[in-house]
Image (cartoon, rainbow, N blue to C red; front, side):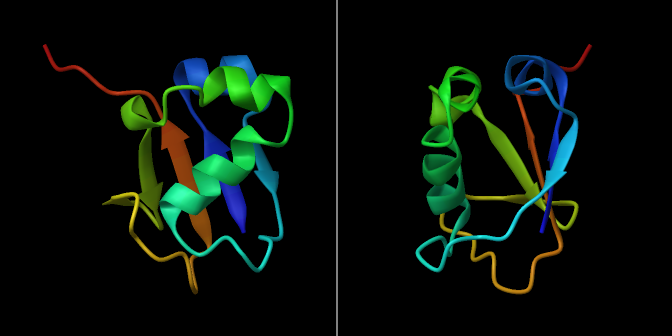
Length: 83
């Protein structure tokens, strides 16, 4: 699965994207964010407030309960504002 990071999420993690293989226990968006936080201090720093992180699965906005089965791409980004 390809993970994409945007804006300050990307800056805090220190990479734009990565390819990962999900552990069997990771089945939802919420599981993914929790698992990523455990991967090191840069991930914990970027995802320390999971309620503010927005996620898109295959380019569609997703809720924490969204299943990842069959997903090819997940993007994580901070809230957006309009203007």
